[in-house]
Length: 174
Ligand SMILES: Cc1cc2nc3c(=O)[nH]c(=O)nc-3n(C[C@H](O)[C@H](O)[C@H](O)COP(=O)(O)O)c2cc1C
Image (tube, rainbow, N blue to C red; front, side):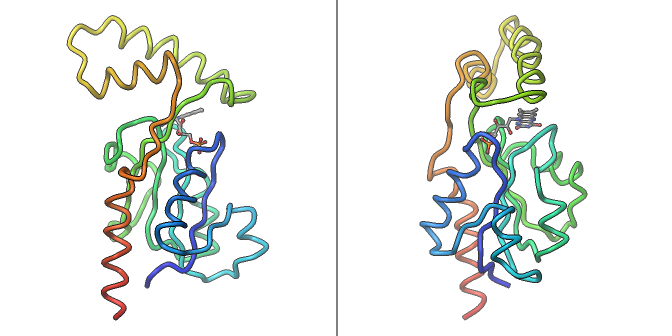
C-alpha cells in the first residue's frame, strides 16, 4: 500500500527536517509520533522516520504496533545509505521492509541529560580514534568534522532513494 501519512520521532530536529521535506515532496500530512496518536487512527499506512540511537530507530516499535509501516528511515550521523544491514538487524525488521538511512547532523548543544553525556564520551573516544587514524576515508573525515564541530548534513538530495520508492508505490497503485 502507498503510505497516507508521514510519522516521525526527532530529538534535535534533523529527522523533523527530513519529515517536512518529504511532506512537501509527496503532499502527505506529517505528524510526530505523539501527534499521530491523537490524530491518526490505528491501522493507517505510514512512512516512518526516527533518529538512530545505537542503531535503534527511535519510536519504530511503538509506530509498528499502531500502524502499518510501509517503509522506514533511520536518521543518523553516518552517510546516507550506510549501516543498512545493521539497522535491519538491530531493529529486527522483516526482510520485506524497505529501509533507508539518511545523514542528519550533530549538535552537542541541542542534547540534554544522558544523551549529552553519551555523545560527550563519543566525541572524546571516536574523535580521538579518528584524529589519530592516518588513512581516513572521505566518509571518516566528514564524521570527524561533524563530531568536532557539529553541523547539519540534511539535504533534499539525500531523499532521492526514498522518493524513488514512493514514486514506484504510486505507479503500482495505478
Ligand atoms: C545517544 C546517541 C546515540 C547515537 N547513536 C547513533 C547511531 O547508532 N548511529 C548513527 O548513525 N547516529 C547515531 N547518533 C546520532 C544521531 O542519530 C544524529 O545526530 C541524528 O541526526 C539525530 O536526529 P534528530 O536531530 O532528529 O534527533 C546518536 C546520537 C545520540 C545522542
